[in-house]
Image (cartoon, rainbow, N blue to C red; front, side):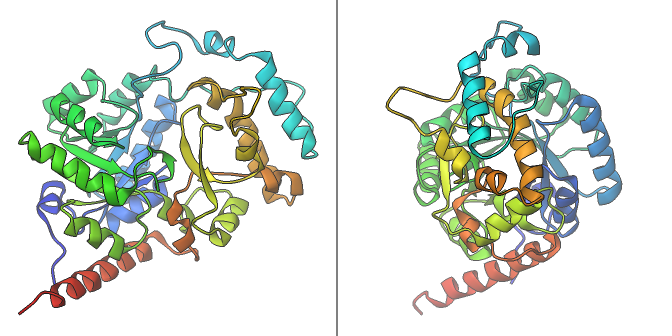
Length: 377
């Protein structure tokens, strides 16, 4: 049985499995195994991104891969042309005190000089990162948290590079189609990272029907909790053109995930994740921990800061927590968290990324054969 589809022909791949990862090694491994690797580029400076993409270029030898830039439609300071220093000035001292108290409660002394992260998801660097990406042979540009900016869509059309957009609701898909995106990723609430409230099993057919009603034929990838080929086959049976995955690559041998976090994921059930704004300022699914518990809405009205202020405040602290957790610090281990979807309950073993791709294909084919054999006659 062949697994090739129209989307495979469009992108020059063997299997319609798209793999989002912040790790270049995962991106290259998936692409080399016949899937389509997508590098999460938002955390990089333009110089760093150029280096990462040059490495991927060498590693894949002309095979296709893409980049995900995440330029949000809404964020603190949009349109105000604020510097990182200006944004940092909008972080109230009370929130800095909350973080310090949380650290001390877990036997971690706050650093004498507070470090704040870069406003990675503010959108201010999106154009620069796109310019860098376009100097490499990328075959897909992806965006999340809203309709891609005009410059991204225009650049894609000028160069013949498809632009993808992630959505969590059918009305968002209609807006994306009207904006002219080439690929829509319908992502359910089971997904790791930023996600909506509707399950994958519901949002995928809703998006497909909404697009059909307006006569739009944009291909749709299913996302959210998909960590096996049989789940992917189920989505394709409903009309999806393939799958967009992220969490499943976090426990591969090539992944950049902190060692203690990997151990947490391998031991986690599907109920051990929570949709929380306590890391970025927007609801994102991640491992439940005493960090996420600390940012749950409280009676006194304590809420996370808006994006990107929350991530500027928290990311450097969370990275330090990861280091301490891997060194055996019990307080840090209780706080450690990372973006991951509910599919984590099926992620029970560290494997090479290539093996994950192979298992996806085998599982997909077996599921398709079961479906075929169930038909009458």
